[in-house]
Structure formats: C-alpha cells, structure tokens
Image (cartoon, rainbow, N blue to C red; front, side):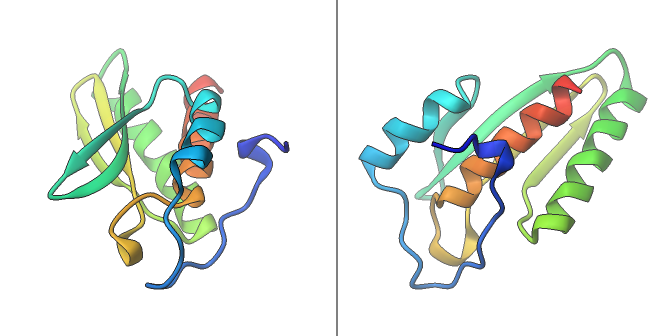
Length: 113
C-alpha cells in the first residue's frame, strides 16, 4: 500500500462513499496520533499539536493551509498560543473519506518537518 503522504486527494461529491470500518482499520495505523471524534453527529479526525509559542503555531497553521489549498481539501484549524487543533472531515458527505486520512498524514509530515 502506498503511504498516505504520497497520495493525492480526489474530488468528493455528496454521493462519495464514507470510509468503512475495514478501511479505517487499514488507514488509522498510518496516523496513530489522531483521534476519531464525533462532532454534531459527524465523524472527524482530530489532533492537537504543541509549539513553543504563538508564532510557531501560526507558521504551522499557514503551512497546513497551503497544503489544504493545494489539495483542495480544507480542515478546521484552531490556532492558540503554543498549540493548533486540526480537524479533518469531508463536509460533502458529513463524515470521513480517504482524503481526510491523506491530509492527516500530510499534516503530520508538516509537523515533523
């Protein structure tokens, strides 16, 4: 299986399939620090990253925003002093799609890099 960070997002529409439990079992190990949470009845991937100060958190937010624009898939980002909470889900299907796992992996790569 190709690593998630090397994959590209595909265009999603309201009829796109959500990931199955079997797909989650396959994909989740590639993003072990992410949590699957339910918000307003929708499954989301969520992770909080810690930083030394607000500027570092803001720089990270901007790098995540740039890759989100490049991929055409956008997260919820909450930037605070010393931390950023990132949430990925697919609005069109009100839940999780493979794209969300791809973007979570790319977000981890940004944080590591």
